[in-house]
Length: 336
Figure 1 (cartoon, rainbow, N blue to C red):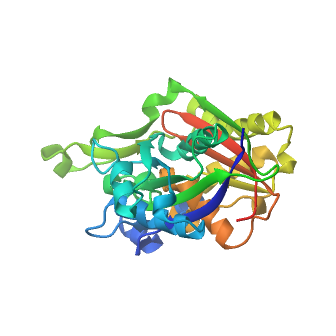
Figure 2 (figure 1 turned 30 degrees about the horizontal axis):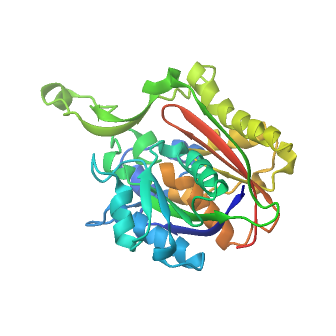
């Protein structure tokens, strides 16, 4: 049995930016933007596709791992919104990067997808089935953002990220993980055909907005005691603590927290309930927003490129996504 570690990371962020000035022009209130902590995000370029983004992030991760595309034996993909209803993105991404020897499949658990993807890859490696596994994630949700709802058009951003997992040396690599689901909140967040959230006035009465594919989230900031809000706040730190307990570790053993990010008040509560300092959390929501499936590995990639994470550090990854899915994974970091 092998442990698996991460030997390469990569990201791709589109060039086009939307900033706080754009958000204000669309009708978002400045105080809400500042409270959420999302001051800009990226938007997929004209003619660009989500698999284009995935391929660019994947190629960076492969190169940094010192590999060639033909070395990859398996690709696991995660996305917020597939390029087609069927087939899956990962098939086209495999072709675009030239990973001719790789099998592929997709796990679609939205914002939380990076966690089970790493757990699955770890188990394949532990059984000795594969040596080099590419995991790639993407978000193109600006295509379905609701231009009447700031929680959608401000918060959502596009981008892609990737990691390479391979057998780890000594005591490095994946130590434990935790996964959980609460289907009670199935209808509170997701993507579906619906009307915009807010519209009014005479024009909407005469010509009501048509239904189209839109991202939505029903989050009541005015009622923090609601069951959904309590779940959003508590479920992630509880999952991290369960994963740490399986590894005989505690929260104060965490050197770095790599979370999925939505808005600052939510991720801030996770950090607070874990009892760790903000300096230990790697976050990029102020400049990229919520990139759904791509968030966790973009945050990891930036931390790696800034040389924050050192050999032997305990790194906890945590995510939460529609469904509702929650998960965390604990890794003892190895040398890249």
